Amino acid sequence: MQKKKLLMYQFELLFLYIGLLNLRLCASVLSLSSSSLEQGDAGSIRWFREAKNYEGSSDLVDVEYHMGPVLASPISLYIIWYGHWNPVHQATIRDFIYSLSSASSSSSASYPSVSAWWRTVRLYTDQTGSNVTGTIDLSGQFYNFKYSHGADLSRLDVQSIIRNAVTSHPNGLPLDPQSGLYLVLTSIDVQVQDFCRAVCGFHYFTFPNVVGATVPYAWVGHSGAQCPGMCAYPFAWPKDYYGKPPPSTSTGGNNLMRPPNGDPGVDGMISVIAHELAEASTNPLVNAWYAGDDPTAPAEIADMCLGVYGTGGGGGYAGVVSKDSWGNGYNLNGVRGRRYLVQWVWDPVRRRCFGPNALD
Ligand SMILES: *[C@@H]1O[C@H](CO)[C@@H](O)[C@H](O)[C@H]1NC(C)=O
Image (tube, rainbow, N blue to C red; front, top):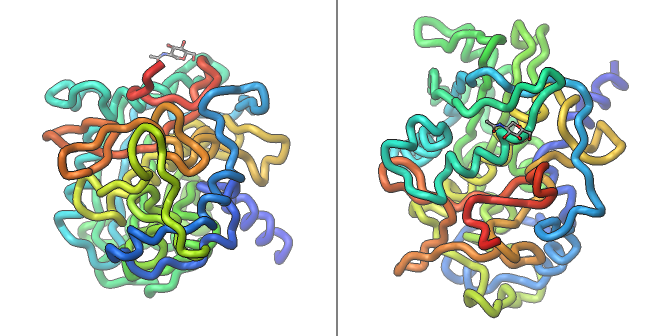
Protein backbone atom coordinates (compact mmCIF):
# COMPACT_ATOMS: atom_id res chain seq x y z
CA MET A 1 0.00 0.00 0.00
CA GLN A 2 2.66 2.39 1.02
CA LYS A 3 4.70 1.45 -1.99
CA LYS A 4 1.77 1.91 -4.27
CA LYS A 5 1.18 5.28 -2.81
CA LEU A 6 4.74 6.25 -3.34
CA LEU A 7 4.58 5.22 -6.94
CA MET A 8 1.44 7.21 -7.51
CA TYR A 9 3.08 10.13 -5.92
CA GLN A 10 6.06 9.86 -8.19
CA PHE A 11 3.84 9.74 -11.19
CA GLU A 12 1.98 12.79 -10.16
CA LEU A 13 5.17 14.62 -9.56
CA LEU A 14 5.76 14.84 -13.21
CA PHE A 15 3.98 17.85 -14.21
CA LEU A 16 5.17 21.26 -14.49
CA TYR A 17 7.94 19.87 -12.59
CA ILE A 18 10.00 22.81 -12.37
CA GLY A 19 12.31 19.91 -12.47
CA LEU A 20 14.63 21.86 -14.58
CA LEU A 21 14.84 24.38 -11.84
CA ASN A 22 16.67 24.53 -8.67
CA LEU A 23 14.14 23.80 -5.98
CA ARG A 24 15.91 25.86 -3.41
CA LEU A 25 14.90 28.86 -5.38
CA CYS A 26 11.37 28.27 -4.79
CA ALA A 27 11.62 29.78 -1.41
CA SER A 28 8.70 31.98 -1.19
CA VAL A 29 8.12 35.36 -2.57
CA LEU A 30 5.36 36.37 -0.28
CA SER A 31 3.83 39.23 -2.09
CA LEU A 32 4.20 40.94 -5.35
CA SER A 33 4.92 44.47 -4.40
CA SER A 34 6.61 46.94 -6.64
CA SER A 35 9.73 46.50 -4.57
CA SER A 36 9.81 42.81 -5.27
CA LEU A 37 9.41 43.64 -8.91
CA GLU A 38 12.47 45.80 -8.77
CA GLN A 39 14.57 43.58 -6.59
CA GLY A 40 14.78 40.35 -8.44
CA ASP A 41 17.67 38.11 -7.57
CA ALA A 42 20.57 36.23 -8.88
CA GLY A 43 19.31 32.93 -7.53
CA SER A 44 16.72 32.80 -10.17
CA ILE A 45 19.30 33.72 -12.69
CA ARG A 46 21.30 30.73 -11.74
CA TRP A 47 18.09 28.80 -11.73
CA PHE A 48 17.34 29.78 -15.27
CA ARG A 49 20.88 29.28 -16.37
CA GLU A 50 20.73 25.77 -15.09
CA ALA A 51 17.51 25.22 -16.95
CA LYS A 52 18.20 23.81 -20.32
CA ASN A 53 17.15 25.96 -23.18
CA TYR A 54 15.79 23.95 -26.04
CA GLU A 55 14.65 26.82 -28.16
CA GLY A 56 17.28 26.50 -30.79
CA SER A 57 18.47 22.98 -30.95
CA SER A 58 17.23 19.49 -30.62
CA ASP A 59 20.14 17.14 -30.62
CA LEU A 60 20.05 16.53 -26.90
CA VAL A 61 16.42 15.71 -26.54
CA ASP A 62 13.83 13.66 -28.21
CA VAL A 63 10.19 13.62 -27.33
CA GLU A 64 9.10 10.10 -28.09
CA TYR A 65 5.81 8.34 -28.51
CA HIS A 66 5.06 5.51 -26.10
CA MET A 67 1.94 4.07 -27.80
CA GLY A 68 -0.71 5.50 -25.49
CA PRO A 69 -3.67 7.66 -26.51
CA VAL A 70 -3.74 11.40 -27.09
CA LEU A 71 -6.86 13.55 -26.77
CA ALA A 72 -7.91 13.30 -30.39
CA SER A 73 -11.66 13.85 -29.99
CA PRO A 74 -13.09 17.28 -29.22
CA ILE A 75 -12.39 18.02 -25.56
CA SER A 76 -15.17 18.88 -23.14
CA LEU A 77 -13.39 20.99 -20.57
CA TYR A 78 -14.91 21.30 -17.11
CA ILE A 79 -13.56 23.97 -14.79
CA ILE A 80 -13.87 23.54 -11.04
CA TRP A 81 -13.34 26.87 -9.30
CA TYR A 82 -12.17 25.97 -5.83
CA GLY A 83 -12.26 28.63 -3.15
CA HIS A 84 -13.04 32.30 -3.43
CA TRP A 85 -12.66 33.67 -6.96
CA ASN A 86 -12.83 37.21 -8.32
CA PRO A 87 -15.25 37.25 -11.31
CA VAL A 88 -12.85 39.48 -13.23
CA HIS A 89 -10.14 36.85 -12.90
CA GLN A 90 -12.54 34.10 -13.88
CA ALA A 91 -13.40 36.02 -17.06
CA THR A 92 -9.70 36.33 -17.96
CA ILE A 93 -9.27 32.57 -17.65
CA ARG A 94 -12.51 31.71 -19.43
CA ASP A 95 -11.62 33.92 -22.37
CA PHE A 96 -8.31 32.11 -22.64
CA ILE A 97 -10.13 28.77 -22.90
CA TYR A 98 -12.47 30.25 -25.53
CA SER A 99 -9.40 31.44 -27.46
CA LEU A 100 -7.90 27.98 -27.84
CA SER A 101 -10.25 26.58 -30.46
CA SER A 102 -9.76 27.70 -34.00
CA ALA A 103 -13.46 28.05 -34.66
CA SER A 104 -14.13 30.57 -31.92
CA SER A 105 -11.00 32.60 -32.53
CA SER A 106 -11.85 33.16 -36.17
CA SER A 107 -14.29 35.72 -34.88
CA SER A 108 -11.61 38.06 -33.62
CA ALA A 109 -8.12 37.01 -32.65
CA SER A 110 -5.40 38.12 -35.02
CA TYR A 111 -2.11 36.34 -35.54
CA PRO A 112 -0.21 35.32 -33.49
CA SER A 113 -3.28 33.93 -31.76
CA VAL A 114 -3.87 31.48 -28.93
CA SER A 115 -5.39 29.02 -31.39
CA ALA A 116 -2.28 29.31 -33.59
CA TRP A 117 -0.26 28.44 -30.48
CA TRP A 118 -2.42 25.32 -30.01
CA ARG A 119 -1.60 24.26 -33.57
CA THR A 120 1.80 23.07 -32.37
CA VAL A 121 0.05 20.79 -29.87
CA ARG A 122 -2.04 19.43 -32.74
CA LEU A 123 1.09 18.13 -34.44
CA TYR A 124 1.10 15.19 -32.03
CA THR A 125 -0.67 12.04 -33.14
CA ASP A 126 -1.53 8.63 -31.72
CA GLN A 127 -0.76 5.25 -33.29
CA THR A 128 -3.84 5.46 -35.50
CA GLY A 129 -2.53 8.71 -36.96
CA SER A 130 -5.15 10.88 -35.25
CA ASN A 131 -3.95 14.32 -34.22
CA VAL A 132 -4.68 16.07 -30.96
CA THR A 133 -7.98 17.87 -31.37
CA GLY A 134 -8.34 21.54 -32.22
CA THR A 135 -11.61 21.83 -30.35
CA ILE A 136 -11.76 22.60 -26.65
CA ASP A 137 -15.23 23.42 -25.44
CA LEU A 138 -15.86 24.89 -22.04
CA SER A 139 -18.66 22.45 -21.26
CA GLY A 140 -19.32 23.12 -17.61
CA GLN A 141 -18.21 24.98 -14.51
CA PHE A 142 -18.57 24.12 -10.87
CA TYR A 143 -18.16 26.61 -8.05
CA ASN A 144 -16.74 25.09 -4.88
CA PHE A 145 -16.81 28.32 -2.90
CA LYS A 146 -17.24 26.54 0.40
CA TYR A 147 -13.76 25.00 0.31
CA SER A 148 -15.20 21.49 0.71
CA HIS A 149 -11.77 20.00 1.40
CA GLY A 150 -10.25 22.92 3.29
CA ALA A 151 -7.53 25.34 2.24
CA ASP A 152 -4.57 22.99 2.52
CA LEU A 153 -4.89 20.23 -0.04
CA SER A 154 -2.98 17.05 -0.78
CA ARG A 155 -2.58 15.89 -4.35
CA LEU A 156 -5.18 13.22 -3.87
CA ASP A 157 -7.62 15.80 -2.48
CA VAL A 158 -7.73 17.24 -5.99
CA GLN A 159 -9.35 14.00 -7.17
CA SER A 160 -11.80 14.14 -4.27
CA ILE A 161 -12.71 17.67 -5.33
CA ILE A 162 -13.52 16.35 -8.80
CA ARG A 163 -15.61 13.60 -7.25
CA ASN A 164 -17.44 16.19 -5.20
CA ALA A 165 -18.19 18.16 -8.38
CA VAL A 166 -19.51 15.18 -10.33
CA THR A 167 -21.70 13.93 -7.49
CA SER A 168 -23.18 17.25 -6.38
CA HIS A 169 -26.86 18.01 -6.88
CA PRO A 170 -28.38 19.88 -8.48
CA ASN A 171 -25.53 21.80 -10.10
CA GLY A 172 -22.94 19.05 -10.43
CA LEU A 173 -20.80 18.38 -13.45
CA PRO A 174 -21.29 15.26 -15.56
CA LEU A 175 -18.78 12.47 -15.15
CA ASP A 176 -17.52 12.38 -18.73
CA PRO A 177 -14.88 9.73 -19.39
CA GLN A 178 -15.48 9.90 -23.16
CA SER A 179 -14.41 13.47 -23.81
CA GLY A 180 -13.97 15.11 -20.42
CA LEU A 181 -10.94 16.97 -19.14
CA TYR A 182 -11.32 18.45 -15.65
CA LEU A 183 -9.43 21.58 -14.69
CA VAL A 184 -9.29 22.33 -10.96
CA LEU A 185 -8.26 25.92 -10.22
CA THR A 186 -7.52 26.83 -6.62
CA SER A 187 -7.84 30.39 -5.34
CA ILE A 188 -5.07 32.60 -4.02
CA ASP A 189 -5.49 31.47 -0.41
CA VAL A 190 -5.36 27.72 -1.04
CA GLN A 191 -2.22 25.69 -0.46
CA VAL A 192 -1.63 22.49 -2.34
CA GLN A 193 0.95 19.83 -1.64
CA ASP A 194 4.19 20.77 -3.46
CA PHE A 195 2.69 24.00 -4.78
CA CYS A 196 5.42 26.61 -4.88
CA ARG A 197 8.04 24.06 -3.88
CA ALA A 198 8.10 21.67 -6.81
CA VAL A 199 5.13 22.57 -8.98
CA CYS A 200 2.83 25.35 -10.20
CA GLY A 201 0.33 22.85 -11.56
CA PHE A 202 0.14 19.23 -12.61
CA HIS A 203 -1.92 16.89 -14.72
CA TYR A 204 -2.76 13.25 -14.26
CA PHE A 205 -5.80 10.99 -14.54
CA THR A 206 -8.40 10.12 -11.94
CA PHE A 207 -8.69 6.78 -10.22
CA PRO A 208 -11.99 4.90 -10.66
CA ASN A 209 -12.21 4.18 -6.95
CA VAL A 210 -12.00 7.87 -6.12
CA VAL A 211 -13.90 9.56 -8.92
CA GLY A 212 -15.78 6.69 -10.58
CA ALA A 213 -13.85 6.57 -13.85
CA THR A 214 -10.45 7.22 -15.39
CA VAL A 215 -10.49 10.75 -16.75
CA PRO A 216 -7.64 13.16 -17.39
CA TYR A 217 -7.50 16.21 -15.17
CA ALA A 218 -5.21 19.08 -14.33
CA TRP A 219 -4.78 21.35 -11.37
CA VAL A 220 -3.32 24.87 -11.40
CA GLY A 221 -2.94 27.13 -8.38
CA HIS A 222 -3.14 30.92 -8.08
CA SER A 223 0.39 31.83 -7.02
CA GLY A 224 -0.18 35.54 -6.46
CA ALA A 225 0.23 35.51 -2.68
CA GLN A 226 2.44 32.45 -2.38
CA CYS A 227 5.14 32.34 -5.07
CA PRO A 228 4.64 34.64 -8.06
CA GLY A 229 8.41 34.69 -8.60
CA MET A 230 8.28 31.00 -9.30
CA CYS A 231 4.87 30.47 -10.90
CA ALA A 232 4.16 33.88 -12.45
CA TYR A 233 7.52 34.56 -14.12
CA PRO A 234 8.14 36.89 -15.95
CA PHE A 235 5.59 39.07 -14.16
CA ALA A 236 7.52 38.54 -10.96
CA TRP A 237 11.04 37.53 -10.19
CA PRO A 238 12.32 35.14 -7.52
CA LYS A 239 14.00 37.14 -4.81
CA ASP A 240 15.88 34.89 -2.50
CA TYR A 241 19.30 35.69 -3.79
CA TYR A 242 21.47 38.72 -3.15
CA GLY A 243 18.67 41.11 -4.08
CA LYS A 244 20.08 41.59 -7.55
CA PRO A 245 17.85 42.77 -10.38
CA PRO A 246 16.91 40.49 -13.21
CA PRO A 247 19.42 40.44 -16.04
CA SER A 248 19.01 43.08 -18.67
CA THR A 249 18.96 42.13 -22.28
CA SER A 250 20.06 43.61 -25.54
CA THR A 251 16.60 43.49 -27.02
CA GLY A 252 14.13 44.49 -24.40
CA GLY A 253 15.34 46.04 -21.17
CA ASN A 254 15.01 43.62 -18.30
CA ASN A 255 12.78 40.60 -18.32
CA LEU A 256 10.12 41.77 -15.97
CA MET A 257 6.85 42.58 -17.59
CA ARG A 258 3.54 43.85 -16.47
CA PRO A 259 0.71 41.34 -16.75
CA PRO A 260 -1.51 41.88 -19.81
CA ASN A 261 -4.75 41.29 -17.88
CA GLY A 262 -3.78 43.19 -14.77
CA ASP A 263 -3.01 40.47 -12.24
CA PRO A 264 0.39 38.76 -12.06
CA GLY A 265 -1.01 35.67 -10.34
CA VAL A 266 -3.81 35.16 -12.86
CA ASP A 267 -1.75 36.06 -15.91
CA GLY A 268 0.86 33.64 -14.61
CA MET A 269 -1.81 30.98 -14.24
CA ILE A 270 -2.73 31.36 -17.90
CA SER A 271 0.65 30.09 -19.02
CA VAL A 272 0.55 27.24 -16.49
CA ILE A 273 -2.96 26.30 -17.63
CA ALA A 274 -1.75 26.31 -21.24
CA HIS A 275 1.22 24.17 -20.19
CA GLU A 276 -0.97 21.60 -18.45
CA LEU A 277 -3.59 21.46 -21.21
CA ALA A 278 -0.88 20.89 -23.82
CA GLU A 279 0.62 18.06 -21.78
CA ALA A 280 -2.69 16.52 -20.75
CA SER A 281 -3.66 16.40 -24.44
CA THR A 282 -0.44 14.81 -25.66
CA ASN A 283 0.12 12.56 -22.64
CA PRO A 284 -3.25 12.10 -20.92
CA LEU A 285 -2.54 8.70 -19.40
CA VAL A 286 1.17 9.36 -19.02
CA ASN A 287 2.03 6.79 -21.68
CA ALA A 288 2.09 8.81 -24.91
CA TRP A 289 4.44 11.73 -25.66
CA TYR A 290 7.39 12.52 -23.41
CA ALA A 291 11.17 12.63 -23.40
CA GLY A 292 13.50 10.70 -21.16
CA ASP A 293 13.86 7.09 -20.20
CA ASP A 294 12.15 7.34 -16.86
CA PRO A 295 8.37 7.24 -17.12
CA THR A 296 8.05 8.34 -13.51
CA ALA A 297 9.84 11.60 -14.28
CA PRO A 298 9.24 12.36 -17.93
CA ALA A 299 9.85 15.68 -19.61
CA GLU A 300 6.67 16.50 -21.48
CA ILE A 301 6.18 18.88 -24.39
CA ALA A 302 5.79 22.01 -22.25
CA ASP A 303 8.41 21.06 -19.65
CA MET A 304 10.98 21.29 -22.39
CA CYS A 305 10.23 24.96 -22.98
CA LEU A 306 9.75 26.39 -19.48
CA GLY A 307 10.48 30.10 -19.38
CA VAL A 308 10.58 30.44 -23.18
CA TYR A 309 7.96 32.83 -24.60
CA GLY A 310 9.66 34.04 -27.75
CA THR A 311 12.68 33.80 -29.99
CA GLY A 312 15.91 33.69 -28.02
CA GLY A 313 14.11 32.83 -24.77
CA GLY A 314 15.69 30.83 -21.97
CA GLY A 315 18.39 31.41 -19.42
CA GLY A 316 16.33 34.02 -17.57
CA TYR A 317 15.28 35.87 -20.69
CA ALA A 318 11.67 35.42 -21.78
CA GLY A 319 12.48 35.88 -25.46
CA VAL A 320 11.20 38.41 -27.97
CA VAL A 321 7.60 39.19 -27.11
CA SER A 322 5.38 42.23 -27.56
CA LYS A 323 4.97 44.98 -25.01
CA ASP A 324 2.21 47.52 -25.22
CA SER A 325 2.72 51.15 -24.27
CA TRP A 326 2.02 50.39 -20.61
CA GLY A 327 4.73 47.76 -20.54
CA ASN A 328 2.31 44.85 -20.51
CA GLY A 329 4.02 41.84 -22.01
CA TYR A 330 2.17 39.44 -24.28
CA ASN A 331 2.84 37.10 -27.17
CA LEU A 332 -0.64 35.89 -28.19
CA ASN A 333 -3.97 37.42 -29.08
CA GLY A 334 -7.19 35.95 -27.79
CA VAL A 335 -10.89 36.48 -28.26
CA ARG A 336 -12.49 39.83 -27.44
CA GLY A 337 -9.24 41.72 -27.80
CA ARG A 338 -7.54 39.78 -24.99
CA ARG A 339 -3.79 39.42 -24.87
CA TYR A 340 -1.92 36.65 -23.13
CA LEU A 341 1.64 35.65 -22.44
CA VAL A 342 2.04 31.90 -22.88
CA GLN A 343 5.16 29.77 -22.88
CA TRP A 344 6.12 27.84 -25.98
CA VAL A 345 5.89 24.06 -26.39
CA TRP A 346 8.07 21.52 -28.11
CA ASP A 347 7.40 21.29 -31.85
CA PRO A 348 7.92 17.69 -33.04
CA VAL A 349 8.34 18.71 -36.67
CA ARG A 350 10.77 21.60 -36.19
CA ARG A 351 12.35 19.74 -33.29
CA ARG A 352 12.62 22.81 -31.12
CA CYS A 353 10.48 24.98 -28.88
CA PHE A 354 8.09 26.98 -30.96
CA GLY A 355 5.23 29.45 -30.83
CA PRO A 356 3.40 31.51 -33.47
CA ASN A 357 5.28 34.68 -32.43
CA ALA A 358 8.59 33.12 -33.50
CA LEU A 359 10.76 35.38 -35.63
CA ASP A 360 12.27 32.47 -37.53
C1 LIG B 1 -1.19 16.06 -37.67
O1 LIG B 1 0.14 15.70 -37.32
C2 LIG B 1 1.00 15.55 -38.43
C3 LIG B 1 2.32 15.04 -37.86
O2 LIG B 1 2.89 15.95 -36.98
C4 LIG B 1 1.15 16.86 -39.17
O3 LIG B 1 1.97 16.69 -40.30
C5 LIG B 1 -0.22 17.37 -39.58
O4 LIG B 1 -0.11 18.65 -40.14
C6 LIG B 1 -1.13 17.42 -38.36
N1 LIG B 1 -2.47 17.83 -38.73
C7 LIG B 1 -3.06 18.89 -38.17
C8 LIG B 1 -4.46 19.17 -38.60
O5 LIG B 1 -2.50 19.59 -37.34
